[in-house]
Amino acid sequence: MSIEEKSLNFIEQIIEEDLKNGLSTNKLRFRFPPEPNGYLHVGHASAICLNFGLGLDYNAPVNLRFDDTNPSKEEQEYVDAIKRDVEWLGFQWDKECYASDYFQQLYDWAIKLIKKGKAYVDNQSSEEMAKQKGTPTQPGTDSPNRNRSIEENLDLFERMKNGEFPNGSYVLRAKINMASTNMLMRDPIMYRIMHAHHHRTGDNWCIYPMYDWAHGESDYLEQISHSLCTLEFLPHRELYDWFLDQIYDENKVRPKQREFARRNLSHTVVSKRKLLQLVEEKYVTGWDDPRMSTISGMRRRGYPPMAIRNFAKTIGIAKRTNLIDVSLLEFCVREELNKTAPRVMAVLNPVKLVITNYPEGKEEWLEAENNPEEEVMTYRKVPFSRELYIEREDFQEEAHKKFFRLTLGTEVRLKNAYIIKGEQVIKDENGNITEIHCTYDVDSKSGSGTEASKRKVKGTIHWVSIAHAKQAEVRVYDRLFSHENPDGDKDVDFKNFINPNSLEIITGYVEPSLTTAKNLDQFQFQRLGYFCVDKDSSKEKLVFNKTVGLRDSWAKIKDVQ
Image (cartoon, rainbow, N blue to C red; front, side, top):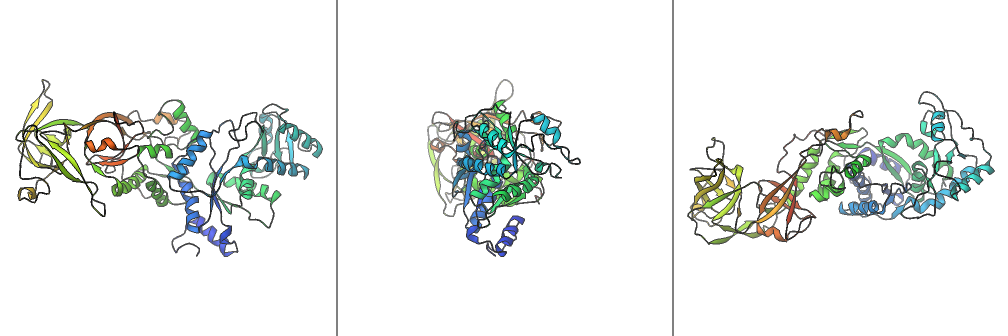
């Protein structure tokens, strides 16, 4: 085999069969072909991992090609975002290509098709053409313009190119078969008139090729060996091959289109049109809102690129569409961050704890491990003092037997510090606890080696020193949609399922080491979850995003196969 012995997916089986049948390994070339009309999402991430993964497995080049044939929806901003996302995932393309690189060649080939009697100019309305298209069970009828002379077609097509006609007045159609059982073969449109400024070619063109005409021919020009598409392009394969038949040179590699199923993610939408709607209608703050299923959103939320690659590898490639529980993606994120994220202490729902027998004005800098998963353990210093913040839910005045945190009369260990014992509480006029008073065992410091430090207590809780704590804005995210398949019912607006509680902004307190943290730095707030520094953060105002909890609070991981 050309790649290491393993269980091959059906795409790899196709490639292996082609190699056995004589395709040279140095002729292998793949591509990732996004349209720059929005930001990439988690579905694109799987396609990126598939194509670039094959490139790595076979030591073959992979092109990044922008399908920039619709200037009314495409922008340089999207081109830049796509490149940033692919690089962030850890992949490097061989050639950066654009369909617009081939506009002249595509036009020249279209002229050849007209001269061969295989394309014609049509000036019917779109409604008239739709009526003539027929139905899946009834053949279409010929356009009255189908038999225009070659000379008239050449003249009209050149005038279309020269900008003599308004938008929508003329199109160029392939002359194939209006009775084909494949509706896409019933004289599909190859070119339409669009007087629109293109982000790369400016105003040089006012006719633009349709996807089906540009895509396969671009693959051919780049000598792509395997053109991998999602399943909705399966009916397009016949047209893909017909267009190649018209220009193919047998001395060159002929691209092969093959299709794989989308792997949809629960509680998300991955339609760029719907994602754009969320942005434009202000349901989210932008394409990189951490609740979005975009790669930019996942990056800002703190998802590591390797977690997304592991997720894509875990769900694999399939021939049928299915819905993957988002919990699996979060599992991959959690698993990766557990290995890489430093542990720090933060309190998000604070209550004041006073150690009454700790000397006033005294402070200590205690040693705390950064990550127990490290091969070589590293440590940092955290400040300790008489007054601390602990989590309000880590204390109960009267607790049941299975509550192993702080109560009156019981002992717990403060992480990296001392054993304390709850003594009394101070309440306000409404009966709310404002302070917890406790005492500490002076000989019980963690790691000191004393008998008292080795004493076993039932619970360990985290804390921050009030005198040293830094206030932070913490953005706690939940699912953007409450329904697992928000766009599954075409009769119900997907926005009806938007979760009104998908974002909660709270004020927390973090240990002072975090004042030097930079944008996208990732941490485990001990006992709370994984968090990362948001781009809005500054030294004056720390801002953290909750990436994922320490355990799945929604559902067990389902079988994804």
